[in-house]
Figure (tube, rainbow, N blue to C red):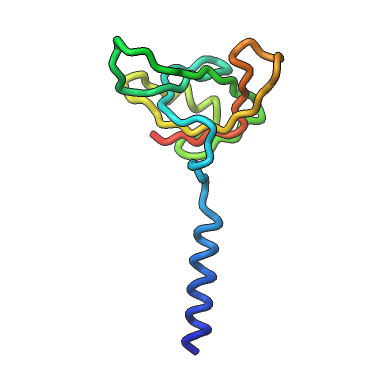
Length: 114
């Protein structure tokens, strides 16, 4: 009886771990959303020294981009974005080759936390 109960508990825990919403540890880029345009966003470091240089990335968002987290669509993002309160983002991107003029990266999945 104890083995059956232990087996059920272990199975339940494995299901919980396996069904988590988004594993951001394997994201291509992580940072704060600094700017939102019609079809692109700029992601970089938040709270940095203004005199220091830091990398930021402009990436395209298309109709196939999957949104997870607190923001669920590209239409919702500009409505809720506020430059004073940056959103944390984890991005998975694909290389689009020479098909676009913005750094050739298109977001396939984005997880945004307010």
